[in-house]
Length: 417
Image (cartoon, rainbow, N blue to C red; front, side, top):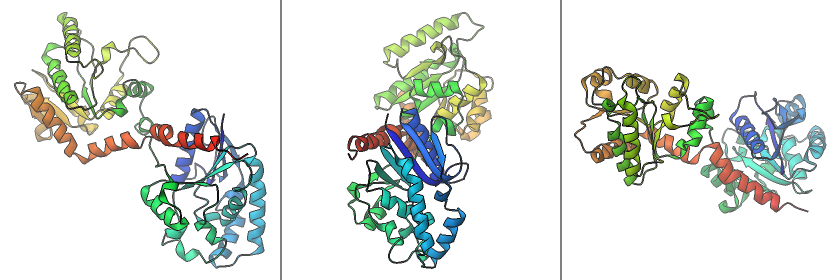
């Protein structure tokens, strides 16, 4: 089990973007089987499975660090600074024992605790631990920080590459600045962006999380929601033909039909069987999901509570209602609150609720034409494009799987003897 130590000035509940990222990295690494440990100057434990140790002198607001920082900002390198460097170095030495990779967030490139920076410069080239400088910010390229920096050491450490250390930038722009600052080819700097946990951010229920994972909803290009009971007047087969046209255009699609067969008409179960047949003939066994057919996350029949239904609105990209007849159109109200664009058959009750804010079609329209309008409309919507861009490239799960774990695996394999 590789042992990874993450280092920063502070951790949550101290508020900050770097603090959140470090905490997320640590929890994800622990979840992937790494022996994840965090050392920080102030803050608290970051989550289950992550060992935590507080070294107060790492804190940028520690009283001795503040006193030394005041001298440094005035251009004075005092014996107090050198004494603090030695103490921090000795504080960190036992924490590094047996560690395969030490990830330092920002402290090698930012001046908030230059004694910590200097101690890390002394420790990183020695021993078997591989160091990673995870760079969110760069003091030397920030106009607000430049007046606090001076020629020579220790300020020059913030622009000096340490032999054997791997540098990571969180964006292409930071990588460009870092390469110029260190005199290093950009290709030698790893690019690992920050991310988001969509299920946590959307506060999905456990069932909602399970559905998103089991149906691979994060990976789709279009998720359509049809929140109705299965009755013939809902004209569900029309939606299946729309999906078939989207698939024919090589789009990754899911259509979620949430309800069971309507309880009051015996023929509704036969209608569900017919729809299953249509789905199979159209080659949509993966793309069209009848939630009534799904097992629950713990076995048995899937039950969609009101909260889980709200999850599905948050997971979808558009509502589709191809009904022949509606008395009101309650899903339009829910879609509106979820900021979900709605595509409906052109019925008076639906127009009454949605006005000119819904997209309507005639059931006599070819499904191919509706599919084309739907996807063109979505693609013109920047919110949709941004959402899908984030889900494709910026989820923590994907970043961990595709970037962070491969990086750490390479470093562990290349560990110094």
